[in-house]
Amino acid sequence: MGEVKLVGTWVSAYTYRIKWALKLKGIAFDYIEEDLCNKSALLLQYNPIHKKVPVFFHGGKPICESMVIIEYIEEIWPHNPLLPTDPYERAMLRFWIKYAEDKGPSMWMVGEGQHKADQNSLEMLKIIEEKALGDKKFFGGDNISMLDIVLGLGHWLGGEKLLEAHKLHRLHVWLKNFKQVRVIKEDLPDLDAMLAYLRRQREISPATH
Image 1 (tube, rainbow, N blue to C red):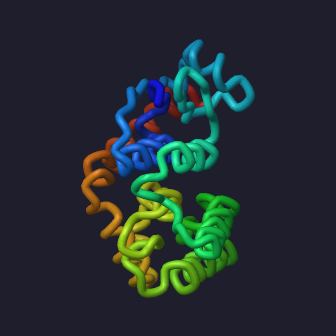
Image 2 (cartoon, rainbow, N blue to C red; image 1 turned 60 degrees about the vertical axis):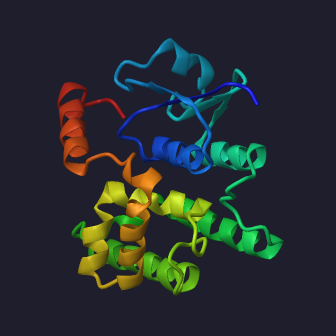
């Protein structure tokens, strides 16, 4: 099927989306760590528009943007599916993926000190819990789906403590279950180490985004 490579960085939730998708499907790949403070010629050549990770290579052809990459992976390697087989269920899962993507990190920004923003974030999480998760173990039922991978962003934003503090019990249990799945648990950055690294990077390059 061609050589598979991934260019990413260990602090990027979007890089881990691709790692998890590949590992859940059992696809071997080479990983190349990128220094975003000193961007490589490889990154600038193959993602000249956004100059961001992840960049995915299959058979020498580059693909950018994490959701585009995951959809491509699902099409090329349909085993261990990350989307339901039923067309309606697949459409509904994609609806919630778009909802989560549109809201982005703001969904998890409860406790930032702005009452209106806090309320909006809590409302988003309650909608996801009630309408998308329901009583299921994962958003895909008994197995991890594409939506679970997308919402794994919660780990980077202190999701477990936030969900517990605001009594979002089902989402709290979901995130704990998600992080206990072997391929997720084996490849999840330590939050303290990640935050320390990001603080150092801001001190070294305050103008870098």
